[in-house]
Amino acid sequence: MKKDQLLTRRTLLAGVAAVGAAGAGAALATGLGNGPARPAAPAPGPPKHSPLKPSAYRLAPLTGYGAPRAAPRQPPVRSEPILRMTGRGRTMLLTFDDGPHPKYTPQILDTLAEYEVRATFFVCGEMADYNRDLLTRMADEGHVVGNHTWSHPLLTKLTRRRIRSEMERTSEVVEQAYGEAPRWFRAPYGAWNRAAFQLGSELGMEPLAWTVDTLDWTTPGTATIVDRVEDGAAPGVVVLSHDAGGDRSQSVRALRRYLPELLDSGYHLTVPRRRLL
Image 1: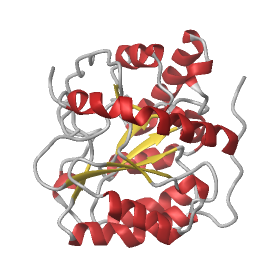
Image 2 (image 1 turned 90 degrees about the horizontal axis):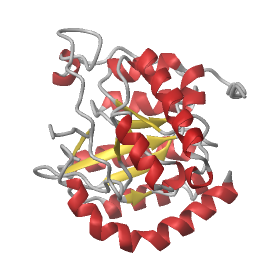
Image 3 (image 1 turned 135 degrees about the vertical axis):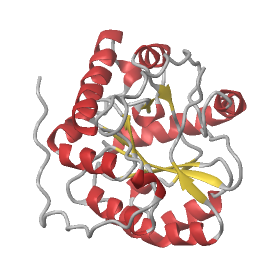
C-alpha cells in the first residue's frame, strides 16, 4: 500500500502544475465546488455517540424523507478533476478517503457532530459493504458520500471493464445503505485517466480531487497534520485526509484540534453542491 502511495505522491507532485491551471475553469461547473476479505475488527468497538443537537441541515434530512428528488442530470465528461470550490466567503471542504472504518470513522463523525459540521467521505465499496450502518449515519447527519472505487486500485493500470465494475459495485452499495447513488467520484491515488472521467460521468458523478493534502497516511504526527491544514486554509480549499487504510488515530486527533480553530477563524466548512447544467 505504501509503495503505491509513494508512487501516487510523485505522480501528484509532477502533475500539480498542469492540473492547477485547468482546475479553476473546471471548478466553475460545481456548486461549491473474486469477493472482498472482511476487514480486521479493531481492538475496542466504536465509541457510542451522544444524541445530536438540532440544526438547520438536520431538520431537512438529506435522504429518505419528503418528496422524491429529481434524478441529477449527467455531468459533462471532464479532462481534469475539480480541485477547488466556488462560493462566497471563507468556505472550505473537508474530505476523508478509504473508509468507512469501524473504529476511526465513528470518532471523526463524533467530532463533526460536536461542531455541527458536515464533510465528504469517499468510501471504498469493500469497506462500505461491511460498515453499512456508518453510511446510514452519514446520511442521517447530513454528510456527503462519494465513490472511491471498490478495492482502491490504480485505475491507470486497469481495463475499462474493470474500472466500470469498481465504480458500479461501490455505487450500488452506497445507494442501498446511504439512500441515494453517489454524485461525486475520486480516483484512488489521484490517478485519473479518460476512462475514469467518462465512466464517472455515465454513472452521474463529478470528479473531485483536492487542494490541500495532509499526507496523514504517512503518520507524520498530529501537530504536522494540523499545521498542514491551517497553513493551507483559504477560501475554496478542499482538504484531503483519511479515515481508513491504516492507523488513523493521528488524523482523528488532528481533526479535534484544527476544526474548532478553523471555525474560530471564520471558515464555513460544508459539502460540495452541483449546479444544474
